[in-house]
Image (cartoon, rainbow, N blue to C red):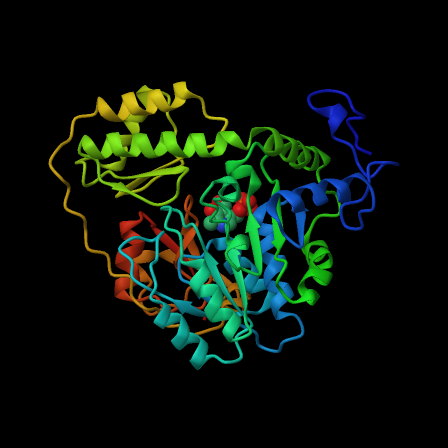
Length: 417
Ligand SMILES: Cc1ncc(COP(=O)(O)O)c(C=O)c1O
């Protein structure tokens, strides 16, 4: 193995655990050395490699803080990615949601008081789980949240899939630097890493049992054939970071400047993450199809475009020309009358069955229009951003049906009676 015998496209780099290549889940050679280099760069107790994205790291993080606990509970923000929900199905986790305030699926700003209350009413919770930054670039106050968690001796887990790069800015806002215990990064999203390359960071201050068990937690859910192509790209990323640290602040400054120019030309820019530009397109008078058609003329592919927002994500591999093209595309688009935003009602949902029970039960697909009163079997996300509108085990109500229709969802899998 492998069957391609090193021939063909990328073949010679796609090896397996041959002599000298080390073994990801019991490393003692070059993989361990490479992880140690990543560990120094991110200043962690240890940074573990994943060849299966943040998705694998999320399962591992949740397993680490819930293992051995009967009926584990996690407090999490409602805009969590589907990878979190899938892990909850596998691990039988009950979630206490922080709903916060939101007028969009992707972004939640919650009051610290809401977290304090959730901790008080769920003293047995095993951890707090946040997505920061979120899809629209909102960065949670991790330092303050971490203080609250530490006071309660509860672990803080952060999905930082979108911002590996944050560790290399002068205003370092990487959650691991701000007090989170366990953090996952999709290196492949903002660093020059192949798709699937990710990190599980364990902080220097978290309980040692988390560090001691992290490798096995990853191993439990991972393929026994990790991609050496991805491992090599994670190793290459260390070298890239070491040699190109100056590029991060330079890019952040360029993006800030571009945001300002766009703002001065009438765009409503959602400020937030340094490597994201988030535009409120309905405020600018465009539907998602109109806006996307315009971008296509410039061969620009946004990270995400939905009814109200368009998200652009950058990395230090973007050139000045890329930024110029984006600027030209946006500044040649005339502003039109604002499209009035439909008021969305992100109601608190009613959990009738556990996430796990509902997801594992037999289901049938029905039209959303006919679903009122049914129990959702398979969480529904639109992708991107892969954030659930309704979650397995929740009751379908009129308000949920309205939301599903707003996001163009036509059918839903419901629990079979
Ligand atoms: C917020 C968030 N978390 C987790 C993930 C999963 O990351 P990965 O694709 O690296 O498995 C994604 C992917 O899009 C994401 O956007």
